[in-house]
Image (spheres, rainbow, N blue to C red):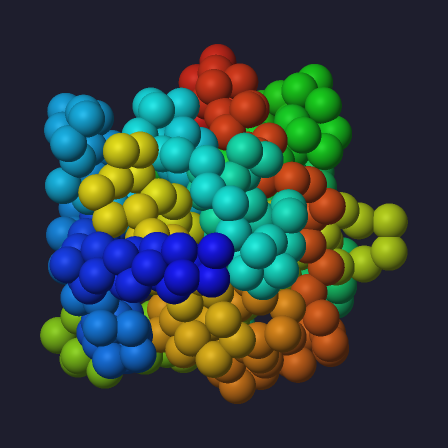
Length: 351
Ligand code: FE
C-alpha cells in the first residue's frame, strides 16, 4: 500500500511538472499583479500566462473555446460580472480548504465557481470646498436622493456599467424592489447632468463644479491621488475632492462593498495549477500586495489594508468599514431586475 501511494505521488508530480503552466484571462493588468505571478512561479515552478481583455470578451472567448479552453483561470471585477461568467457556464465548482478559510463566505459563490480576491466600496466623492462637515454628517445613500441640498448636484455614470447595476441590485436585496425603485426614481431629479463618463470622470465633474458629489468606486480615489501626469485630465482632481463612506451610522445598512475575483474555467487543462494560483492570491501576504496595488481592500480578514486606505477611514473617524450585510451572489440574482428598474426610471436621461 505504501509503495502504491508513493508511486502515485511520483506520477502526480511528474504530471504537474509536465503541465507547469496556468493561463489567466483577466480584466486586471497591473505591473504589481505581474510581480505576484513571478513570485508564484518562483515558489511553485508553475509558469503564468496572462491574457488581458474586457470581461464580456473573455467570457465569450472562453465559451467559444468550449471543451478545450485556452484559459484556466478567469478573473474579473464585480460580483455581477462573476455571476455572468457562472451563468454563461464557463466556470467549474472547486473544492479548496484554503479558499474556504481565507475568503469569507459572503464573498464567494455559493457553488464555489468564483472567489472574491479584493474588495472595493461604492462611495461618495464630494467637493472639499462646497460640502460642509455638517452636510457630511447627515449624508447617506438615502439622504442623497431625499435631501433637497443635493438636488441637481449628484454625478453618476450610465446604466450600461455594471457598478451601479450592482449598487441597485444590492438595494433590491436589502430593501426590496419597491424601495430600490423609489430610490432610483428620486435620484433622477438629484442628478447634475445626464450620466456620462467613467467613475473618475464623475470626480473631475465635481472638481469642475458641474456637481458637488459623485458616486464612484473607492480605488478610483487612490488612482486620482496617484496621478502625477500633468497632461492627464485627472491630474489635480484629488486636491479638490474627498472620499466618504456612506451608511456607517447605527441603523444604516453599511456601504456597498463589491469584489474583484476569480474562478477556475470549466474543462481547464491545468486545473490543479489554477486552484494553486487562486489560493496563492488569497494568502495574507499576497492579499496585502494584491489589494494595495489597485487601492483595494483585502478580502482575507487576516490581511491589513494599505496605509493610504486606512487614512481614508481615519479621516471619517472609522476603525472598520461597515459593509452591506448581503451575500454577493444576490448581485447576480438581482442584476436583471436592477437594470430594468434603471431603464424604466430613465436613469440615463432624467433631465
Ligand atoms: Fe473599475
